[in-house]
Amino acid sequence: MKTVLVTGGAGFIGSNYIKLMLKKFNDYQIVNVDNLTYAGNLENLAEIQNYNRYTFIKADIRNRKLINKLFDKYNFKYVVNFAAESHVDRSIEEPEVFLTTNVIGTQVLLEAAKNHWKIYPDDKYSTEYNDGVKFLQVSTDEVYGALGKEGMFVETMPLKPNSPYSASKASADLIVRAYNRTFGLPINITRCSNNYGPYQFPEKLIPLMINNCLNDENLPVYGDGMQIRDWLHVKDHCEAINAVLHKGQDGEIYNIGGNNEKANIEIVRLIIKTLGKSENLIKYVKDRPGHDRRYAIDNTKISKELSWKPSYTFAEGVEETIQWYLDNSKWIENVVSGDYKNFYLRMYK
Ligand code: NAD
Ligand code: TYD
Image (cartoon, rainbow, N blue to C red):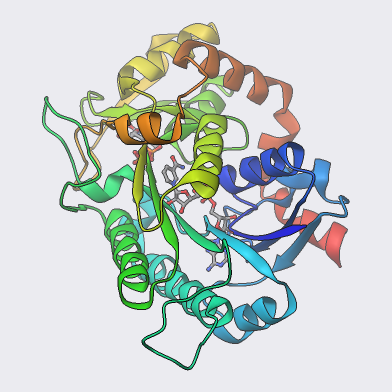
């Protein structure tokens, strides 16, 4: 049995990842550490909560003592670090928690991994680690900053983050890199483009627009709506992380993207059309400060070296996602009303 520490597993991508891994591998045991911020929702994991290969622990990745205790207790082979504050708009309102969770929290995990996985922990010159261990940092394309009309992000580009969110993720990437270069800790960093799919919190573009459409509420489009993102289905992201975890070369960074650039307004119009609503719902609002104009991922490295490629087309993926939100109206109702917070109390207390 291989024990994997997944942090932030009650969030959007982490919960999709845990379910994928448990289905895909019979010899994986997953310990999900999440402190259940507003974005953590255990309802996302309801279908696997009683699996014997799955354990949930409500804990903060910034809690050094507790994280060390978990490393003492479980013989983790891998760490996959999803835990983060993930919303750009929130980082503009309240940057500090982005630094403590995204940067310090990552360093707490790195230090615990180093101390527990190193064969000679007291020898600062030794770079020998237990066989096959790995720390995988789930990062974002936003660390590269914004593109103009041309070009794509490649792994060797300098980091030029523009928001407190992306700056905190870039800082985390650098400290992960430093643990690899200085201490020899086996690591990979993945930098993915915008995800969409089931269980995404309705503060992000696609679920927010679906939810507002369903409730005939205004659809707030920032600025001129011509900002471009490169959209990828969450399941394709999770498969890519899986490929990097098993096949990624030590110390390497892998971009993950869908070759699927869309302007925000195109997506909003597609959602309106699919749900049979009126474009009169669109409301252009003041632009986000520091708003990145365009992201686009060059995924040549992961495709060539690890044979990963996306399986969803955007048309299929969005249709399936809209259908998921229609079929899971209770999930979104609980999120919007805040009732999802009671799930923890009902199930774990
Ligand atoms: P999310 O906001 O849905 O989930 C984050 C999870 O982390 C939540 O369950 C939350 O409770 C948990 N968490 C937050 N602070 C914590 C702390 N201090 N200790 C323990 N748990 C904590 O985010 P997501 O969209 O699932 O993103 C997951 C990761 O993927 C993030 O690191 C994000 O930067 C990265 N990423 C996201 C996207 C995207 O489009 N959503 C794209 C690329 C990369
Ligand atoms: P978001 O889902 O917040 O992801 P990110 O900022 O990490 O790319 O936003 C995606 C794009 O949609 C981004 O350009 C901002 C824009 N947007 C709106 O126009 N209106 C909204 O209400 C939201 C949430 C986002």
